[in-house]
Figure 1 (spheres, rainbow, N blue to C red):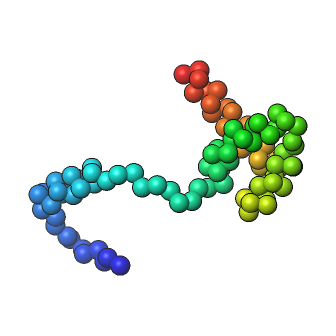
Figure 2 (cartoon, rainbow, N blue to C red):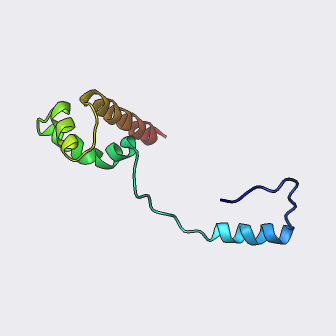
Amino acid sequence: MVKTKPNQKIHVDKLKTTLDKLGQLKEKPKSELTLRESIYFLRDKLKSALKKGYSYQDLSSILEEQEILISASTLKQYLMDINKESESRRKK
């Protein structure tokens, strides 16, 4: 663990080198997503299943089998939020 030094002075050349190094960083892929991000990732397949007649409760149970724990009401809310976001992007 790095400890902070009080009244630490950093040379400007060091800052320039650091800026260059940070600028060269590539995007680091995520190994895990939040529940909301996961639903966003699955949104097309979930919407397709709803059109096929599956209920939010059905989908919640299917997700639970995959250890994605979400209630039917939360799933519905997340999908509604995703729809609202995409509609507002289209308008802009």
